[in-house]
Image (cartoon, rainbow, N blue to C red; front, side, top):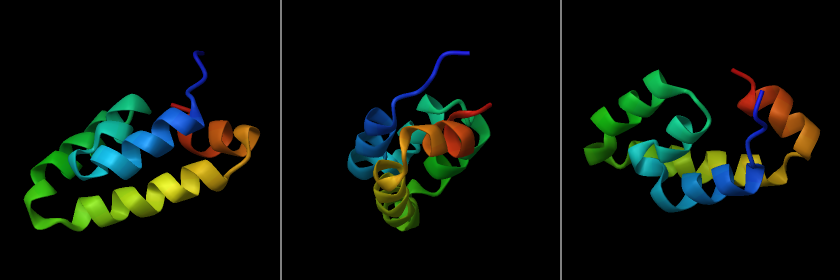
Length: 70
């Protein structure tokens, strides 16, 4: 298994989270597509910002266990 970087995921979520790029990076393709479908509403951007902050505040082990495991 290839570990994912929490910093990369966090920055992607904050900057382009409205398009679900961080979900694609983490291997959550279905959620990434949902973010893309609703990107015009602005709601995924807000959720992406929150998720980015959550990713960056977790420890590396906690992030890998909770978000990066497929």
